[in-house]
Amino acid sequence: MPIGAYADLRLMPADRLVPLPPSIPGTLAAGIFTKGITAHYLIFTTFAVKAGDTILVHAAAGGVGLILCQWAKHLGATVIGTVGTERKAEVARAHGCDAAIVYSKEDFVAAVRQLTQGKGVAAVFDSVGKDTFGKSLRCLAPCGLLVSFGTASGPIAPFDIFELNRLDSLYVTSPAYVTHTRDRSELLRRADALFGAVASGIVRVEVGQTYPLADAARAHEDMQARRTTGVSILVP
Image (cartoon, rainbow, N blue to C red; front, side, top):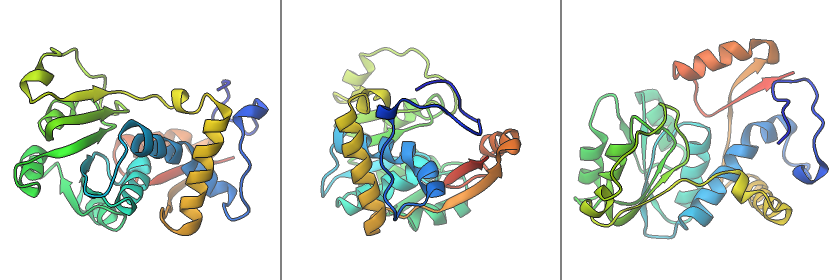
């Protein structure tokens, strides 16, 4: 994408834009688009979630997490989420999580093992990175997949790949947004799926925080302090 975020106006290549249905307000589209497209390729392409799967979603009350959890639940998965506070646990449970683990109060590996009767989960969706990577591996069932799609806590340190062998033949992948939207037909297909899921009520998204563009720094401070829930938008 061309440089130009946090601006009143942007000049965009036409093939990077998608038609917005009348049922999707511009503010909602601004809040859900990249998050929803990310959720779509994670659960339809990276790990094709199906009925009967049990998955773990970190930051379940965050922007991607809230969309991913609802969509995965609709597909028939059992969804376990991790969150930082009890308030966020309530939000996560209201948006598709069968169980919400407050990681500041309990060890999420032990909690996941207990919730799955020791079996572990088929996939972990991890946008946190450094702070959760090692423990996420220990939440997986044999041959499970760790999907690392963000590093909110910092970059993941180098690790011995043979550890995946010792932990029961695990898999790790790191999918990129640009790879899954480079082709225009794919971008339109994912956008149509997202807008359809919102219009049908499969995915419910509330804009949690709205800031004037001039207060972008405060928005970052709130995110870093984990005071935000769900979607945040800047309004020019």
